[in-house]
Image 1 (cartoon, rainbow, N blue to C red):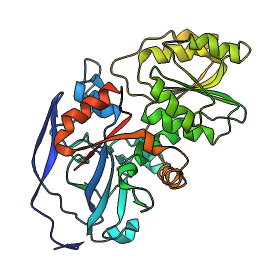
Image 2 (tube, one colour; image 1 turned 90 degrees about the vertical axis):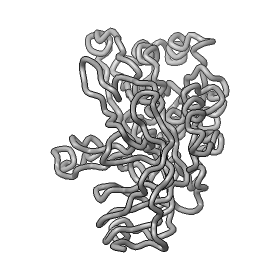
Image 3 (cartoon, helix red, strand yellow; image 1 turned 30 degrees about the vertical axis):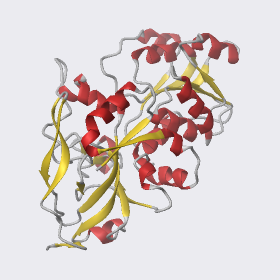
Amino acid sequence: MDYQADSPLPGTMQAVVCYGPGDYRLQEWDVPHPGPEEVVIRVKAAGICAGDTKCYQGAPMFWGDEHRNGYCQPPVIPGHEFVGEVVALGVGAGEKYGLGLGDLAVSEQIVPCWKCRFCLRGQYWMCQYGDVYGFRQHAFGAMAEYMLFPRNALNHKVPTSIPVKYAAYIEPLACAIHAVQRGEIEFGDVVVIAGAGPLGLGMIAAARLKHPGLLIALDLNDRRLDVANACGADLTLNPGKVDVIDEVRRLTDGYGCDVYIEASGHPVAVEQGLHMIRKLGTFVEFSVMAKPVTVDWTIIGDTKALNIHGAHLGPYCYPIAIDMLQKGLLPVERIVTHALPLPSYQTAFALAAAGDEAIKVTLAP
């Protein structure tokens, strides 16, 4: 072997392979072998993201429309939220990443090129040519028994104090932290987070650490709002039961919230936020939308002069996410609600898409 391993890797493995919208198949696939500075893990848990479900359902972002080409390149193994045990190390990989055989490890969602304008400026999460695991053929994902981290990847060791079944939440938590950073929250701000799914709950826990004056969570599911309270929300509101725009204005002497973070993935939450936020406020858009969203842009410019910030991936946030989980700063046991075996991937996708009883659904290969 031209790599380090406790034992030779098997020849094939079970993997979920995406061929097109709704066309995901469990089949035998070749086990990857590491080249120089590459890592192979035995996957222990793989989370299902809202983006994964929308790709499965055929959202234009992933499959293209008249305005753009699709992001997904089938056939590809999906899965960009994961944790695994290091089972093989290419030459130089152990030294480069501080990893040894048997360690638990995660890899950041994007594998950058390290050569484009953005990478050279340290903005690697916006790499012009990077591959996000689970969507491109150069970065197959984690819905399989084994997975390869390419040599350009950003890898992190996971402490054994974080249970494996919860460690797959590191990726969404890192994204949540980055979105909160984009909100530029100041002491005493009134902050509204729309959506109490896996990302929104992580945002609530991260925003709590910014010491806002009032932290409000919005969701149509009261059970999720109960978890939002446990994550640090001061107040929870259900838009199906309360006029949340009027309520937030009432709580702020008619001004509106200082920061609004959209994490629901629903177009109505975008318009709701534009009406709820104060003049000169900061609006953070995180969600992957299933279809284009139409709003009155006059509100953004002439009416309120808003700061509109997008948030993409979790750059520089993985160590923070790992630290938050180690310290028990959020009730991860109430967020990671379901773990299913890999052959039950269709049931897992359905649970994740429905979002009724499930919050974060994982697969265990």
